Image 1 (spheres, rainbow, N blue to C red):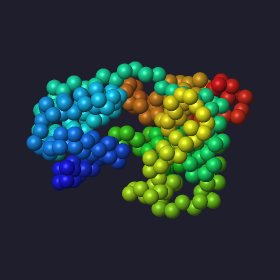
Image 2: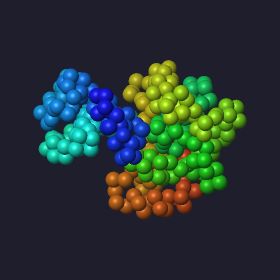
Image 3: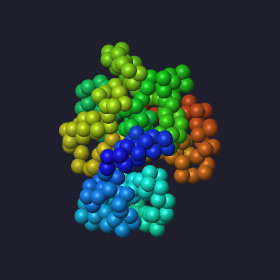
Image 4: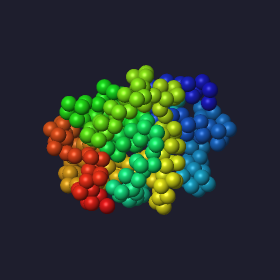
Length: 285
């Protein structure tokens, strides 16, 4: 896409979209142009519809993926090309309701036991111990960890700030990892990506190898840790409102109230990571 791609990238940065969203939108915009072998500036609604049908019928993409692809081209036309009404009537793919895969407490322990490198074990512990998204774990900075109040300050989707649990077990391991690795560059987990911290792909690749080694028959991804965190909190008796605040979900209007009170509630809430290996872990399976 050349110059058009550069313009779109600049528009995404101005709009303060997350690095992950920027990468996805640019990828799908490029895929759209490559499919038709033409510049998006020369195309319109019919070409977008044809491409989306190709993703559904030929590539067999899931509805959630098609939704992101659609959003990418909508952004391209509306913001970068200034064609506001071009795609307004295109339907948004409906997302089927799927029950997410969840690991048992024993399975989480097995995964942690198979991760030999301290950096990756710390990242996985952070994702499960605080319900972090993989992007949040990768970009973690030391100053986000508040050991006095035992919380982790995060900035997630939509640039929204939230607090989540700081597991005692995670804190102890992070201190041990920090003393041994002395990570540089201001990141808890530095890497070779453009940003300077470890990339989602690197973590995903390592995690995938560990999952295969564990021999799980169900589909397990890094996001499964977040689902497991939420499910295990619920099984431990944590109120749904608190879980929603910890995860940073904003579907319900009352979420803002939960976020305001979450710090006080956090001091009385245990991370499921701290429950593993104790009698209470029987609840988690």
